Image (cartoon, rainbow, N blue to C red):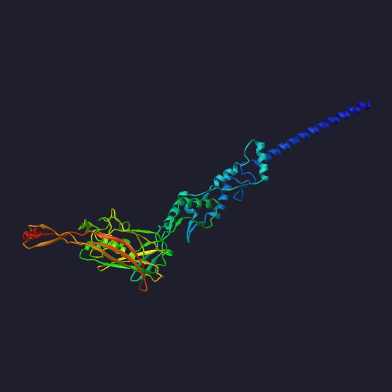
Length: 471
């Protein structure tokens, strides 16, 4: 009996224990489910997940609208009143950021923050959210600006920076040397500098940005010519001002070569400096020498300028590389000391064989044409002189006599004056204290004799004919 009773009591006790175990399990599951639901709701709701930071602002549990406002206010306060400062060689330009529509893509950053931790099923979302709450994520907001407006600002600055190269200049007037400094070539490349500024904008670095430009010095600088301080040589020729066109051509040619600077080793070309002898280029109609005769042409008178320059160049000790004499002797300069030029084939050239720059000074005063070579004062005491020697004279043929029945009895007109032919040698001599140091033969010129031409009346023509036949 006791055994049966004991077994019954154990059965009743076992049933109670099982009941409590089941109840405990149910309660545990319920609590777990409720906790899961609470956590799921808390960590996976419609607000931004915990642990997300935008621009150092913790936006955990914030709505997207609140987060947008917080971040926008912070960025506006920190950046949008700043200026973009561009500099170049001491010049400064301040550009307010608002003028290039500088701002931030706050909406994109907030949207990205909102979708973090929302991938997968409920369990995955909860797991990701719990991890996120422990390990924060930092988000940056992307910058935005109007590239076209930035480019327009730099293009405007470019106009203030760019400059064309200009050689240093020297003028000589009334015995005074005046210098004008060179202008450096500058070219600001817009694309390069836009990229330079953009790199700084994207880093939010608003310190001064030094723009870059291509710079090149001109060939002739003040430092190279500043020691030109004296007149190495000077030569003057005279002309008649009655022919105003020829006078104007002489003045124009002088202006084209005046203040021309030659560096050591540089060659001068008269034709290159004068340019085409055309009416469009400023030259006028005046007599020129063609086949031993003076005929109408454009640019008459420029050969007097080249001849005057030729003499000044020789007196300065410079080397002539190309020169041709006229076909006949001239009234304004001695035989052997002239230099003709033609636009198509004959040039006058010389080279600066000195070890310092020289400058040509050419001008007209009254009926005098003077060309000087400016340079550095000689230290050797040498004075250069030019000397010509006529080695032979050629008599022209007798004048050609032409009958002109329109002339009055006894009337004679010289159409072309006879000229003797010459062979002339030109020497350059160097003197020191009046003593000849050296002599060099520069050129030997031959001028053909020119037969005269006269027109005479019928009575004089008969006399000429009688003289020729000996009657």
